[in-house]
Image (cartoon, rainbow, N blue to C red):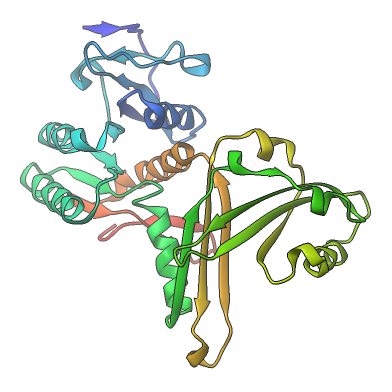
Length: 308
């Protein structure tokens, strides 16, 4: 039985089902609303576990099985990690192309990918796996850092923005409108201070940065300073934060360093990667393909897959 079932006008866009109405599923559904090549066909939810769809998604077609959605071209699997295997098997057995980003690790993740490979070939279906933030985009960034700095050490940690506090020591400096800061420990236990600064109109970033670094309160401390256009949203948001740093070893003869500092909604990032993979599904051969990124000859970044 379908819920909120409505007749659809014919469309040239690929019809995409979102399996799972949780945070990731809602993010995927919202992303599909703005896609020129893809169209949200509906959301598949478990019987007795209805999702919470509101705002732009309040009139979305909702069903308890994907067969109740007519003319589905592909599916985005957004269920909990331990349910991905069974859901993926059912989709591939029905020859419905699919995209997934299961957050499994180690042996479990390897076994999951191997099962997708076998099932995709057995049922002559197509799948893209690992098309999310992690697994997905984050491991690719890590790999790029290691390629550029092969001899060195990596430091990575997450820091929710809600751990930030207003910085009295920085806000009084000339040219600073307001500032937020927080201290976080890396894998080696060393504390690093992260400072986010909004400048006064006309202030020069280089001058303000020098003032902060020369302040006695920062003497002898490891600090990272970032310029922001505005801090109101940063102070209020509860999104995930990430700092990824790669430092070259002293014996390499150079002093190269790479630093990625990011604040984001992990579900939105994962959804964007999944939708990106969905755009490529129609050009793929039968089988399961890992999601990755590459540069096209026109300089634009796009996703590619093995055999795609």
